[in-house]
Length: 293
Length: 328
Image (tube, rainbow over all chains, first blue to last red; front, side):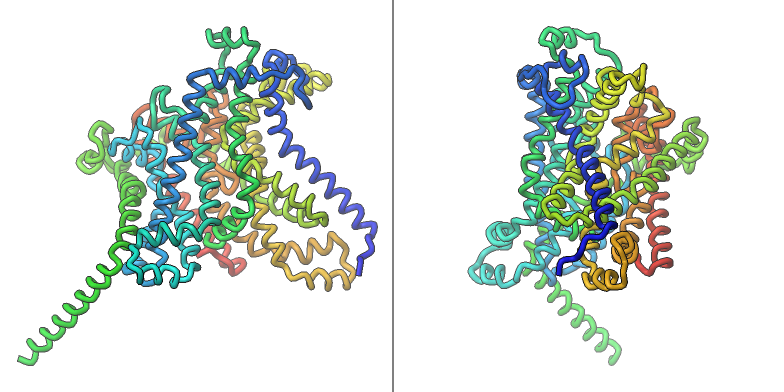
């Protein structure tokens, strides 16, 4: 039976669609504006009135970005920390979760109690900093990838995921004399692809976006990440712009804003690319996480 | 005689038990090794900082390393007094509370409304599109979000100032980024933009769980669209709303569901708007790392943590009394 649309239906739909259209524009336009600004000549953008399309199309900004040693280095460090940090975190978190997922594990209650305490109580950033300093992690690449190796949120999700995998799978391999490590690597991980995909997106984007560790746990330019460089440039535009670098950029008709926009697009692009493929997994992951609280 | 026999048999029973336990442990030794690696990790990165909190009550110098936390002299509540007598303290408390409360009040209803609006869309392509677009910013960093607010609000090159001036609506560019009076609005607004869409996922799932016959019954009774939303959709979301509200209040001082007060204050705060942008956490961080007053900064962190735990427990208690749903 097809319902007849009443006057109220039409009004509600009209208002609703209009509002949602406005919301969609508000969500998307900032991305779009930064995108066109990154392909527009900086000096032209500075004249104002750039709203819908690049007026003076150029690849100058991207050329500058990939020829500037500070930016390229920051970009490389960010790529490296994302790949290494995400891999380490997924492997370690899953390994620990695999042990915890066994119902016959001895002292299971003690372990979970320790985890719940660690999840809910924290010593604060300063005490954390003191610990990092005293174990010698400051000013090293390791500070990006070691302290994030165990993700407790995903640990709980992984434990309940692994419990769903039939024990017979592991048992038959155990009969053939496989070690637990082999079972984990050869049997458990391959059937856990949805979990790994979700972890990839969340932990990966966390690594890619992280700036606090780069700003406060390392010194000097050599280890800075993309996010940190962006902050640095933003602060320069806010305070002043009369440096030698500014002069150099003027010659190329770049502005700090056009370079900034380019860096933002480069920073957002990888996430945008993987996002559509992983979307269906993370909605499930989010629900699982929220039920666990 | 009898007594000693009993003792010895008990001894042998526990002996056997220990033996069995040991054998069982050995049998799962590799699994235990995996888990113990994780526990060792937590010991270093979660529990060491937790014990490190005692330096809030000590005359701690960073040069003495981690051992210094234990060997340095006790000073009791000296840093607590120092904190409440600090000239910044009232400002910090005001800013932290104001930003947290504003976020709670303005950002909490947004995902609920948005979920209802998205649910009212019949066309599934449009529905999927709006939903995807709404939580896109969840995955980008605060740094990029701040960069975007510069792109739109800067007095030099901001698009909004540019558009308003060229339309002749304003003659002077509006100072939004460095004006102390606009800081709270900027923080709350950009937090909603970034995170509200993300939380619609939970509410949409709650709506999806509502029995469709309820809608049919309501329609039979002559309820229009708005009445059905009010009497069927909203009550169906009640338990999710309560859970999310508890989570928001519990994590309020950190920024609630819409994310990090700390990151926002750190990135959007500057020397000009610091009167409205310095919060407890950023102050602790600056005092600790820039001025090297670690013990004092740890005390500030500690006080905030205690208030947070208190908030979590209270909100959970109230929720359970009011609606019968709690988290713990």
